[in-house]
Length: 306
Image (tube, rainbow, N blue to C red):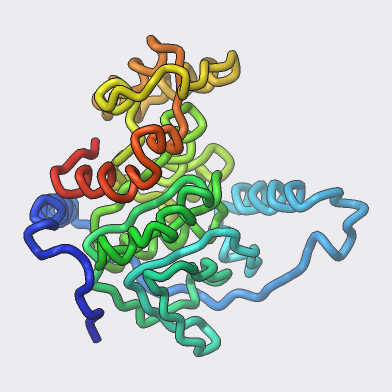
């Protein structure tokens, strides 16, 4: 059952359709196939069995990751569920493991990312693209501006900063199932770039399971450091890079996968040379709804991603 068209006319998505065709062609050349299936998992409140021993949830997460790595099995094989913090909105329907039917909408509210991604089934969408939004505040602003409806059919998802396991698994599942273009909207700072790299290439902590969690086809939609100059964003709305920022940026620039991304490297070098960073909110200097009304639609229509 298809979703009723509510967004822009079909010609708006011409460049997106071309991008998807190139992605599918690359998959065919590489022999890539959609991943399927999954195994039921049992929820265990490990932290609360001895909260004084563990101290906090992060300690438990790190222990579970270490055990998964030591045994060389995915975390899901340990039958441990983690609570999701991510949100999803847009043209997507699915059935959860217990039979609950979930209908994500393009309205002012979002649906929590499921805790058992392997258990969801019967996913249906006619979305033209998936937009990963770094921060919850930006995600909520886009919902308030009715961006999801105006760009329908589409899907938006946020991990509220550094993404949790379930948000990453859901992005991966949506890519494997539908092979629609996936874009990242992050701050033009080293932290935002790091988060985007986690979705695309994986994290150090979960590197042994990167093939189950990453989507190499993700493209950087914004905010690009080069956009700051192009849009004449005033310098007083920018933020100087801290010493920690500079160390993070240097670290990312030295990673092997950056050598395969010359356009990403160029953007990071622009940031390094300017010694300034910018949050997505800097675009509000141009107008309060510039992000949803002008910036993102133009990027999507004319292929402004790298």
